[in-house]
Image 1 (spheres, helix red, strand yellow):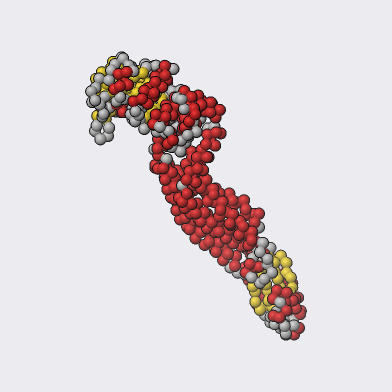
Image 2 (tube, each protein chain N blue to C red):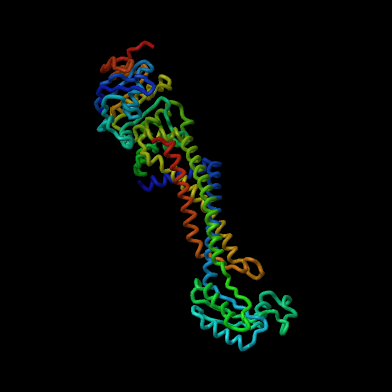
Length: 228
Length: 303
């Protein structure tokens, strides 16, 4: 599903964010990416949805060869990747349902399908009753559920979640994690960067630890491994 | 692209135009003013040309005879003029007839006391020429009759020499001045639209980022901006178009009873002007709108 071969990333200011990453994530896997701040987690995530280009090395996502992917083909890669962020990134002027439908309008899905599918995913994340609310009227956990609904509405092969529980309290975080696990069980690969040791330790998955731009640990059913 | 997507882009473009309020107003005004001035110049030039053509097709030579000319000599001159090559038709206008014409145009009071033997006018001929371009040549030949006849029968010849040329010169001047003005104003309008769109892009930076993350193509992101630009262009053109057409209608159908300047010229009919003017202004409006958007989109929308 995702494969990186000796990937290096050096930013224009000279920062070496990644130094020779080689990793493979299979379909249906659930992977945590952990590590100290500034270790290269975010760069690692951004490379997957082609927000950044590697300085060196090869990246394959789904059927896309990212090194050879032309700029105007990027949208078609992203339609196969759902992205979730710490700050939700919802459109404030649109309702919950409109925010979710937006992702389908962008890919020009038929209007009828948009309506049906929007209700379907909002039901899945438990926000069917809030579909006419605006993001500002929702709690953080609810907003993140909307973001998840938007991420999965086009049935992506992969979900890339960059600290999805970073702004949420522990209880709400667990709710979000159960939702992600459910989505994973339905067949979506999930790559999630996190600082949350409780989640990693209680919901055991594969753990990839990145430090100073290299993978220092890759462990199935691993633990968080860092003292806060 | 699907119809529902078009509808979405239309809606978005329109919304954004409303949201931009004052900038939209500024762009609309500058497009409106420049196209209004363009329209005025186009109408002026068209009509100057129209009048010039009318005059050209109507040119005739007035031959005024000396006051004390004999009846027999009048007939001889009549024949002589008629036999000049290029002359189409010669009409004799008796001085009483001339006075009658004046009475009709100027009114009774003006000619009081000039009737009969007091008539200060001269007999004259009106000479139609087959080809307007030969008019100067024919006039020279008529004038030459003074040398072969004794006493010289012709007092004066008038054929509006240079009038047509003057009209075309005016029309050219109007064209050039108008063009410079309009180009300057159109460029102003262009940059104002570019700025409006730039503001929209700035305001929607975050939204655009999110659209890109969920897989929107560049075209999908750009379309609403072009619609906004084109919309500003169309509305900006429609307003001066309406004003110009209405004004022209009033001018062309104004009553001609007074001895005013307007009563002497005939404007091109509104029907002949409506369609070309509409196409020109609306077309230019859209062009300015879309091109202004292009400037901004290329520079600020890195998609």
